[in-house]
Image (cartoon, rainbow, N blue to C red; front, side, top):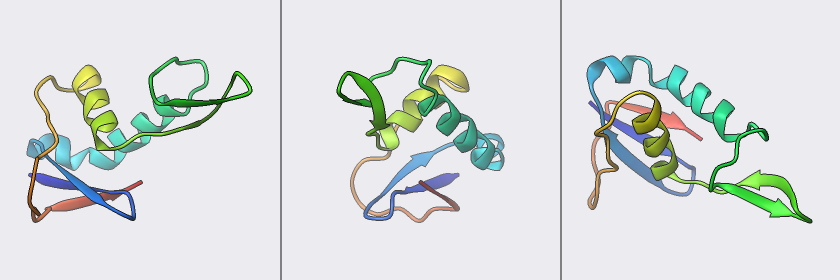
Length: 90
C-alpha cells in the first residue's frame, strides 16, 4: 500500500503493508505524541534560548520512528510521483 505523507507544500510517499496502512492514522498520532514530548530528546528539536521550542521534521522522521517502533524495513520512496492509496496530513 502506498501512503502519501502530505506536508502541505510537498508530499512524500512510503510503501507499507496493508496492516500498517489500516493503522496509519493511529501511528501518526503516536508519532506526533512522541515528537512533541519535551521529555524525549531527539534530533528534530529546534532550540530557542537553550529551551526546546519547536520541531523540524519531514517524512524520514516518521519512517525512522515507524522503523524503531513498528517495523524495521520501511523507506521513503524516491523520485517521481506515486499514486497513494491513503494520505495522511501533517
